[in-house]
Length: 87
Image (tube, rainbow, N blue to C red; front, side, top):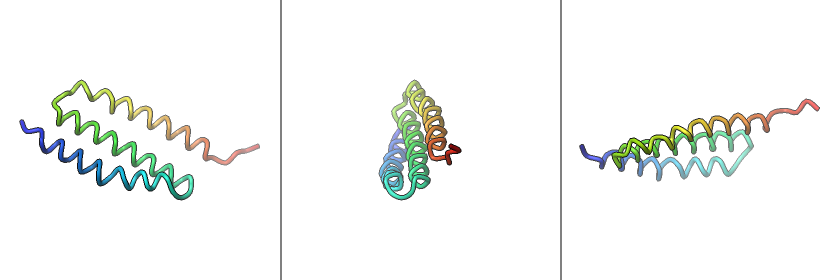
């Protein structure tokens, strides 16, 4: 089984996707930065899964699975901090 397509896909996604996501997360309103952060974490998870498949190491899949949970929890905390305060 060839690993080149997996590694090529991860490289293309890393170069073409992470840059705009980081640009989006560094500018604009807080809501736009949250969207950029979520886009960057989603792309990073997919890149890590593709790298695991490309390298032929299924034991590396634990890292993106943990990152899914942490990014979801981080988004909930960040959204809570963006919310309107009642006091």
